Amino acid sequence: MICLKSIIHPSPRLHLPLLASSPLSRRRLKPSAVRAAAAMSSAAPAAAIAAPIEHFVLIKVRPESLTSGAAAAMVSSLQALSSQVPGLSYIHAGPVLRLRSPAAEALGPTHLLHSRYATKPDLAAYAAHPAHVAAVQAHVQPNALDATAVDWVNAAAGPSPVTPGSAIRLTLAKVKEGVEVGRLVEEVAAATKAAGEARGSRVSFGENFSPARAKGYQFGMVAVFDSVEELDAVEGDGKVEAAKAAVRPLLDEVLVLDFVAGPAGDAPAAASL
Image 1: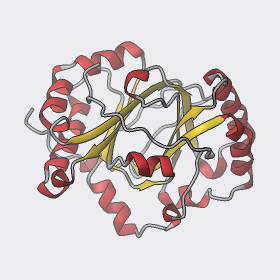
Image 2 (image 1 turned 90 degrees about the vertical axis):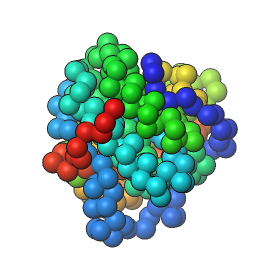
Image 3 (image 1 turned 120 degrees about the vertical axis):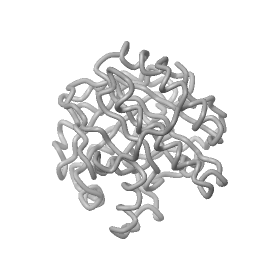
């Protein structure tokens, strides 16, 4: 695939729960901050594909690109792919809202791209599409200090549709030595089933099948909420805490961050590619 050239930085090996949070991350953001994050991003309507191919790229943008407007141009160029690439069922590009674990803080992504596809060939076609290649070469590579990418097939029982304004928690995990990733997927499936749709969350998870740019992360999961307030309210939920406890012994290192899917109608005009 033609995506970002990853600059690998080792991160500490930690023992953290899925959906973890750090003291800094517990601060409630002002509504204006949430709106600002959404204004810089957009989400095409997401089809409720039962088992989508999930594609995530975490991007650490150069500080000068944030102040010059180059980062905003990068977001626009990626958002524009929603109308340019066949087989792309959903795409969101925008800033990270909160880094919620030490591993996330060490990696330091400022932006991310999340897209979905019905099949692996659709993902491969997206990667090779001239519009995608042009956006990466003209806007992403010149402005990215680092990139991390993972892909998985949703192993959850149902879909996790994203709507404008959805608050999403992304969890990437490495398993302990001797633990099969398939076992973690099975345990997460059982734990999430036992927890139910805690406070309205919808989940997608699975084993990463693109290890080259994943920095060792073998598993990915998203939990989708209707709002940041609903995401924050899940902290301390008894069923969620029990689900964490069930999978924690299998985990070595966990990266957790939050982001907001922007309103589809706020997508800026397509960038010149």
